[in-house]
Amino acid sequence: MTHWFHRNPLKATAPVSFNYYGVVTGPAASKICSDLRSSRARLLELFTDLSCNPEMMKNAADSYFSLLQGFINSLDESTQESKLRYIQNFKWTDTLQGQVPSAQQDAVFELISMGFNVALWYTKYASRLAGKENITEDEAKEVHRSLKIAAGIFKHLKESHIPKLITPAEKGRDLEARLIEAYIIQCQAEAQEVTIARAIELKHAPGLIAALAYETANFYQKADHALSSLEPAYSAKWRKYLHLKMCFYTAYAYCYHGQTLLASDKCGEAIRSLQEAEKFYAKAEALCKEYGETKGPGPTVKPSGHLFFRKLGNLVKNTLEKCQRENGFIYFQKVPTEAPQLELKANYGLVEPVPFEFPPPSVHWTPETLAAFDLTKRPKDDSAKPKPEEVVKPVKEPDIKPQKDTGCYIS
Image (cartoon, rainbow, N blue to C red; front, side, top):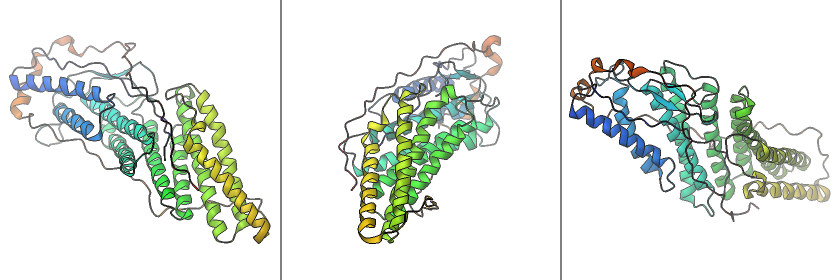
């Protein structure tokens, strides 16, 4: 089953030369700087390389992060920070706030920002794969895993590294708690969409599918709530997506809950549940239109024309008609005025982030290598701050056109 996911742009960054004239006093230190420069450039290239896969991304990220660790942590595994932590200024844009970068003279800021982009890459890789025509079972598993890995990276950054920043994140910036929480929850919700599609394909019990859909709708509602106090100018489009997915999966939950009620000979309640599904589907349809018309970061698409969306509309319509027919011939039950309460709890299929850790410092970091960086020889104007209005060029991301979907219909 083909999926559609909203994606914000990648973070952009200014080039970093890692040239410390006078400070670097030996070939080992010079080699570290050269390797940092090349591994950073390689990782940035892979973010927009369509041939990149998770193994390539992990190897490239580990290579850079293991070298960067020497700028962050002491080599004796104590709690002390490296003497090089504040030697370099790093500039990064934000996914929602355009091309004006945030800048910090702190290697921890670089670790977090690059880690954030790695997590974004996993979400974009999952999105490309999920949008393929005739996606295989192995590819669906890779979509599922990539989204869980992304959630794990975001979670690790939030819990273990963002609190270490000397300069806290500004409001509405990527590293602020509200935004990173929304990214974590969105990854979990989208991974559960894959679980739901699999459960439908394998014809699992409607009760399980309804519970998973209800939990997924709640995830989307939580993610939307995390963004509710942000400036609408840059968060409106993302929030439309989260709201429409919340309505969409609430409609799914009521639809499959109606099937469960019908199987229990509660036809009147089943009809009411399906009517509620119709209502939420109509809300989702209206939000799809609003999403397409809302300006802001993210793709310009018409989700209501997507097959994954149209399938649910047909399913709700056909199931409601079936319930109404059976009630007219067999049950003759009164349809309640109140919609049934969805108090559904899924015992299986709930998504947890994959635990993530950055790699340890590279073996090239030795006490001798560190000693070859002599900070007493650092030029006095070296820490001059960049101009805040300096523009970092946006990342040129490959244009992915949604593929025609001939996916299996749900009967």
